[in-house]
Image (cartoon, rainbow, N blue to C red; front, side, top):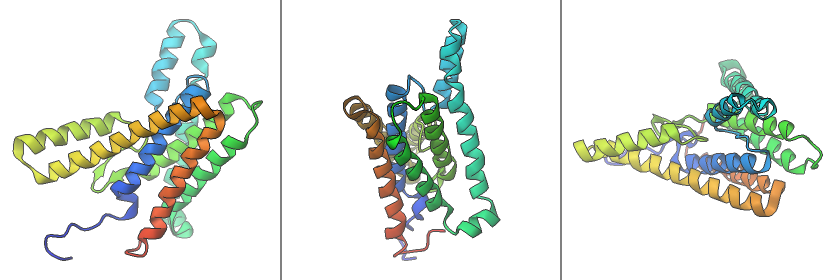
Length: 229
């Protein structure tokens, strides 16, 4: 590598991919909350809190509707971890791309389902794919991050910003900037998901699928420069 040139991170750890995944993550949470009865697809902390609040208010039906999303999220983690097992990953060759194709396919189907399908079925499908995304893509350049939630990313950005100022650490500057970009992308996704869901309805989810198609395209483009996996 040429001195003074920063090595380009592989696609699944790049800021560009992180931005697209964060847009999709924010979009899906806004979509599911508005379209599917106030249940989050990604933010399981929110679902647990809302479950507790509704249970405390003795609203059993409202409390229970948050459970399918939580369970589907757990199943998605198991599936994603299975995809990462050495033998399975070797058979698939590109598990990261397979995960994106799976997510795109499920979201496309969600947009096609008729209005009569229960919201719980749709939220299970979306939470499952969101969980696969979160589990498969968890490194931003060299640092752990989350593509579908903000809390941990915000802590990392704030910590890095403090070190950048206090210690004048150039790596901390790079980290703070990268996390700030991803957080901004999540906000954009949440706003776009909210606005489009309010104006387009259930078919708005296809926009999120389109963002993931663009993410998949990054792998195809980047392999011209270096192998991904």
